[in-house]
Amino acid sequence: MTALAQVLQSRGMEVLGSDTDEKFFTDEVLEKLGIKVIEGFDEKNIPIDVDLVVVSAAYLGQGVKNSEVEQVKKQGLPLLTYPQILGMLFQEKYGIAVAGTHGKSTITAMLGLVLEKAGLDPTVIVGTKVLQWQSNARVGRSQYLVAEADEYRNNFLYYSPQVLVLTSLEYDHPDFFKDFQEYKETFIRLIRKIPSDGFIVANREDEQVRKVVKQAKCRVIEYTAEQSGIKLKIPGQHNLLNASAALTTAHQLGVKAQTIEKALADFQGTSRRFEIKGEKKGILLIDDYAHHPTEIQATLKAAKEFYSQKKIWAIFQPHTFSRTKALLKDFGAAFGQADEVIILDIYGSAREKSGQVHAQDLVREIKKYFRSKATKGFQKVIYIPTIEKAAEYLKKQAKAGQVILTMGAGDVWKLSTALLF
Image (tube, rainbow, N blue to C red; front, side):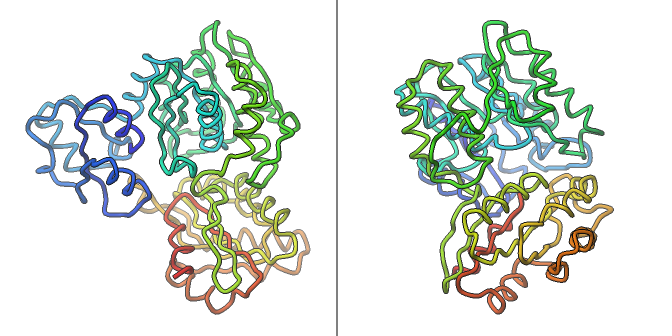
């Protein structure tokens, strides 16, 4: 929503909005741009003379009530969702959509940076802060639009891209997609939308991606991690794969190899993607958005490779009850590279305040996995309900020379902040 606010403001529109009182990096971005944000939701926040109201999909749908949305409907004001507005931008531009279960934010940021360095002046919309821009958006004046395309609620079907980058396919968002087949079907619908004169950049290492791109009516160019050959500042095999996706796409758009390689080698990363938060008393603090079992495995693998001699603490905050329940066994097997694991309470959402699973169920599942592998470390998995209590525990237990890695899509990032101060 903040990225969209920046793009709309750049077109001379007056933009204001409201949000919860929770603090994010986006607050600084909006303040710098002079975009007014009201804390809390109240029907009085809706101006009489507003031309259009754009709402996050989080505040629409069954069982979700928002006083401002109700007021907008009562006033009969035009109401559109974030994906609907982004869909309008895609219609105006040469759109490049980055979709898939994993890697979307990093690839979008990488590709955006490459096109910027090539002088193509793109508009870029990312799901997190790009460290080199200190923002989650770049407003350009050219025909190019690079945007992260989210599959949740079939959102990306509003978009009409010329180019699709497809990263990976694994079952996710079980609160919306009833099974993996339904999940894949929405990607197939997107693939069929790419025009014959467009192209798809597809991850050859992902079996499901290879299957679904057969439905394309345009050229399909495949990529693998080995293709990049670039030394990155950010660790992990998964990031080499991300770099290959950006490299392959930029090459197809006519960007010179030297420009691509230099931009990727300089890429500093994005917020909450293996982001080094700092060091306190010799303990390194890293924060990551990993909230799916495969992402947790990739992040821990990267940490173990990069800090092979250090003890790795994994602090995980499960995100949504439906995802935790649906992927419980996969989550249980995801922490094999960690030396000690702390599981926090499940972070719900605007749609899910409770569910049929508890964080302690995940602790049991991880212990079960460690026992099955006959490792000695299964007793090192504990449940601590809150960030505050976890901070207290780690201040006593963690030692110099160790790494604390916080993971999750909720507010677990606050833990590294608490430990630094």
